[in-house]
Amino acid sequence: MAIVVLVLWLFTAGAGFYLLVTSNLSRARRAQAPAAPVSPPVSVAPSGSVAAPARPAPRRADRDQFAPASLVASRQAPIVPDLRSVAEFAHPAFGISGLGFWLGFTLVHYRVLGWIAFGLIVATACIGLAWFRANTRAARRGGAGQPGPSFTSRLILVHGGAAAVTLTLAALTALVLRG
Image (cartoon, rainbow, N blue to C red; front, top):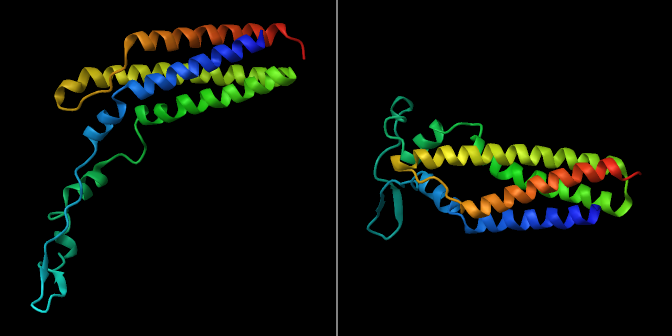
């Protein structure tokens, strides 16, 4: 039974990886990225050497007024990443960690490893649902010039359904198998 859960978990991970590869997530992130920094004009001396910038450095009081757009954007960006970025990292990370613990459980049948894997799959499912919700909200707001990520709904159903079956079978297996 533990091997069935392991194979199903690998199938779920493969479906999730395929879902990420086929989505427009990277294009949506690039569209939200700030513009490239603009460098000040440089003057060339008659001898061919490059001289200092054409404008003198602004005083401290004037710096914010003439700050490039990238500097202003980085100052206004939140220090803590948004929910979508955290979930984008944590969902696969927790899933792969849980898969490793389940592999250990499958090989040695030590119940503690099974329950750690089960806890990680529950956390992975919760993070995945939060990520799905955040992406759904971003897609609704996408009409305002910021494209939200789009995923194939059929693949989301396959990934979520396989994850739900994996979660159920993992719980049953951890309960039934004796260590």
